[in-house]
Length: 115
Length: 113
Image (cartoon, rainbow over the protein chains, first blue to last red):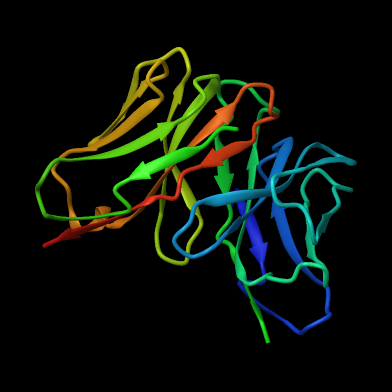
């Protein structure tokens, strides 16, 4: 089964705690992305990575960190510095690093709530 | 700064009706524009991608058009069905931005039987 797997589906964070969201893809895609979605809004880019061991900040990177040690994996850590982490988090991947045919494929998402 | 706007925010139509969803963007320098579907609590599914050199793309009952000069795209859904009920999002892929997408807020569509 090819695709993007996000886990867990639901996650709860205590105040002052760091939590990590998992994203794994077996599509052999080069690029991976993390987006945040708030109710009634579109997606906003947190971080993206075009190649292993390299990643770039998106529009709302503060309070988040990522790593890209393997092509298949792009975990996102929500740190205690992120004061409003409650949201729906979506991971995506694409075959091309850029260009006209950069179709992005999405995982099912992780819903993060604060206890 | 590129901004993407979708109007209306919500739309309710009776089954069988043809409908149009609108998407506008402020900067015409885009690589492509994508339309996605999102079911409640789920991830996004890509519906159509229009390259900057194209005017439209079709898939089944869906037709998406692109007018770069005016900064507009439309998604036309023919003969709507209750199963089409979902949120539809458009997103633009910017030049030289490594594949980053800028999303609109979405249009929540409800098709009533």
